[in-house]
Image (tube, rainbow, N blue to C red):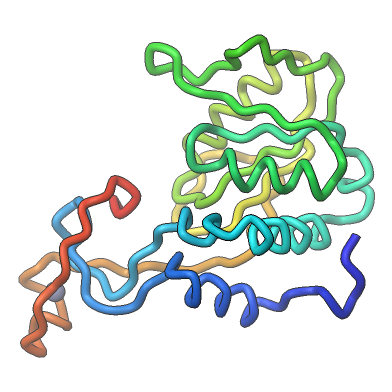
Length: 201
Ligand SMILES: [Zn+2]
C-alpha cells in the first residue's frame, strides 16, 4: 500500500492525464462526427509503466479495506483494460487475466480459468456505458466467482449498464456538439480530426 504522502488527489490524477496527453483540450472531431473540446486517449498514460503502477496503487488505495483485502484476482477486458489491470494486479499482489471477444462474445481464452469462489476486481481503462465491464462481470459470475467491484482510470459519467460497486480514479464529462451547434466553430475555430474509435461518443 502507498503511504499517505504518496496518495494522489483528483487534481493530481487530472494533471498526470493532462501531462501525458491522455486527456487533451482543444477542438476535435469525434468519430461520431460530433465536435468536442476534450479528447480522451487513455493509452497515452500507459506509455509510462511507472506512472501506470502509481495510478494502480492509488486506485486500490481508494477501495474500502474489506473489499481490497478480499480480492484474489483481477480481470480486464481486452484491449484497453489489459495494461491497467496488469498494474492493479501487480499492486495488489494477485493474479491477472483478461477476456476478449470470440465471435463477438466476451470470453476467457488462452487457457485462463477463473477459480470458482474467487473474489474478482474488474479493471478497465475508460468506462463510458461500461458495456465491456458488464460482459466481464457476466463471465466472472458464470465461472461461479464473485465480482468484488470495478475500478477504472476514467469514468465518462454516462449511464452505466453494470450494477457492481465502481471506484473510478477520475470522473469527467466530455460534452459534444453537432457541428452546426458547436460553440468552438461559432468562434471561428477549426476542429482537429483524430480518427480513433476511442473518440466515439
Ligand atoms: Zn466545432
